[in-house]
Amino acid sequence: MGSNNNEVALELAGFIRIYKDGRIERLTGNEIVPTTTTSDPKTSASSKDVIIVPETGVSARLFLPKITQASDQKLPLLIYIHGGGFCSETPFSPRYDSYVSSLVAEAKVVAVSIHYRRVPEHPLPMAYDDSWAVLQWIASHSNRNGTESWLNNHADFQRVSMIGDSAGATIAHNMAVRATETPLEGVRFVGLGLVHAFFLGEDPVDPEVSDEGIKAKANKLWMMICPSTIGCNDPLINPAACTNLKGLACKRVVVCVAEKDPLIGGALFYHKTLHKSGWEGELELMEVQGEGHVFHLFNPTNDKAVAMKTRLASFLNTD
Image 1: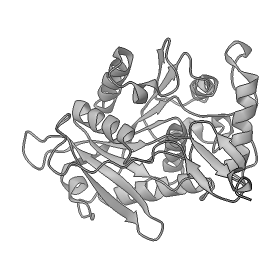
Image 2: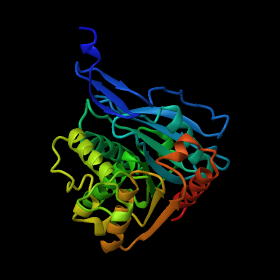
Image 3: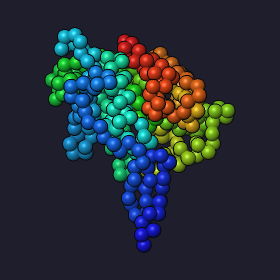
């Protein structure tokens, strides 16, 4: 009887294990590090956690760089959306807390790192809806009369950018699409950074950079985590299916890819699709050779990781 309890129904290697008896074991991103209400000794940035939707637990970790000028100094606002296959990690894990804090310190920006509900307990598109709820909450501060003083006092709502990695990049793109369809009053999006994004499509890339085995697994995964999907032609995961990509709500997009990332095909497909869409913003492809998926999170002191963070910091400060 005991052995049956340990039978695995589904496993996403390195992320999550689901047993036949319904138990869920997340394999990464479970540790929570406390906020730094004074300042992080490594980055001099401060952080705090806020509950945004009490009924669902949707929340965020906010970051503020060391303010050296007047207390009402307005800084660019970064909305960060973490990865983890839609099923693991949080803004509160050591990996994401450290990375976002260091990016905030280098770029001198205010940041809201979103904690959305995760699959399988909360199937997609719930993570998209949760992230949109956070964006609406952020927009409620644009009149300087919101519930969070850091946003009221320090965020420049005319210089707002989103960055996401892996699954978080997929969500970030969709948030930019929603902001096109339903503009957020008082918020001007200027930048969208997609790092090692997860995208699908019928024929996403040229054969030389396409791995059919990986594509098949990615398609299967998508069908399982988003039961209401229409398949790989769903605009939630396939940029070519977005009818209003041409009007994407930002001025600049940077697509970061890594040579050894098994998901590189979808990210290159996104870059190609946006380029052909008629969107009139500035599009950049940042390629890193010899590295794998989200290498910058696993080895943040790597020279290439440092260079990528510096590039993203510059990106966040371009009007």
